[in-house]
Length: 238
Length: 238
Image 1: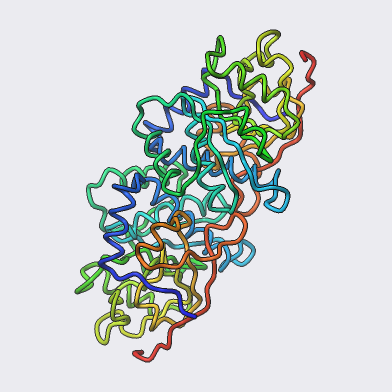
Image 2 (image 1 turned 120 degrees about the vertical axis):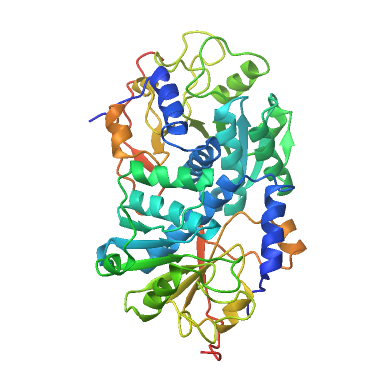
C-alpha cells in the first residue's frame, strides 16, 4: 500500500504551518531533518564500508538539511566534504556553515575532483520547492550525479526532478535515478517514478497535522529518526 | 579514569561561546540536549516496562530540555505528562510548550497526584546555573523526588544539589540521590558525589572546544546521542 503523498504546494503550506501555528523554529525543523538524513546515510553506508561523504548543497533549505547532515555525519566518525557553490546571505545557512568550519569539515568548489575521492554522495541540491530549469553551476553537477557509479542519496527529491511529474524528459537530470531517496515529512508525488531505496524522515509530525494534510505517520522504530519504506515507483518515464 | 568536569562558571561560558562564536542557536542546542535526555530515558525505561513518564520542568533551560525530551518521548510511543509550574515569558519555552500541546501531551499542576500514576520521572527542574535556595513550589517536589520509589532521571544535576559541592547538607534535597543522571556536554563537579547510573549527552562538541575547556569527548556509539559512562561518585557526603 503506497504512502499518501504531499504535493509541492501543500509541502510549502505544511512547512509554514509548522513554523507559525505549530510554533517550531526553522532551526529546530532543519536540525531534525538533517539528523534524519544523516541516519539514512548511516544505514546505506556503514562506516566500515567507507567514510568519505560528499555533500552537495543547493542554495535553499534542501542545502541547509545537507549542512546539518554533514555535521552529524562528522560526529558519527565520517569524513564529510561539502560542495556549496551558491550560498545565499541567509543567517541560518551561514551559521550552519560556521558550525562545520569549526569542525574542520572541508568545503570545495571543485565538484569533479571531489567526486573522485568519495564513497557516497548526498544530493541536497534541490528540494520540494524546485521547479523549472536547473541553473548554473548545477547542470554539470547533476549530470555527474546521473553518470557516477558512486551511490547517491537524494534529499526529498532527486535534484532536477519535477515534484509532481517526476523525472525530466530532457536536460541534465534526464535518466538520473539516485540509489536512495529520503522523503522528509512525507513522500512527494515524484515517488511514483522512483525505483531506488526509499526512506522517510522528520519525526516531528503529530496526528493532528498528519490528518489535516491527509498523510500517514510512518512506523518509526525505537529511537530512529528514519524508516525505510517499500519502493513504490514504477519508473515508467525513464 | 574519571571524565574531566566542567564548573558551573565554565559551563555558562561554554554555552555562551557555542551560541556566539560557535554559531549555534539555542533552539538547536536545546533540541539536541532534549533528544539526548529522551534517549537516556529510553535506555532506562523500555516502552515494555511502562510508558508513563512524568517530566518535571523548572523555569530555565533545564526545564526547556525537559520539554524537548517530552516531545521526543511522545514520538517514541511514551505517554509523557509535564509538570511546569513556573513558566517564564520566554518565547522559546512558550513554543516548546505549544509543540507539546499540539500533541495533546497533558500538563499538570498537581505533582503529588501525577506521581501516583507514572512509571518514571525526569527531573528537569534545575541545571548547572542553580545555586542558593530552592524556591516555591519546588521544595515539596524535590522532597517527593527524594522519597519516591519510582525511578528518577536527573538532567545535568540532581535538582537542589550544588554544582560544585554536590548534595546539600540540609533542606529538601538532603539525601536526594536520583537513580540516573544525564550530564549534558560534560559532567559537572557534583558527579564526585553521585552514585547512580551516569550518562553523557549533547553530541555537538568539537575537538577544538573540548580542548579549549579541558573536556573529554566521550565515545558515542553509532548514531547514539547518549553514552553511559562509569559511575564515579563516592557519595561520601550523603
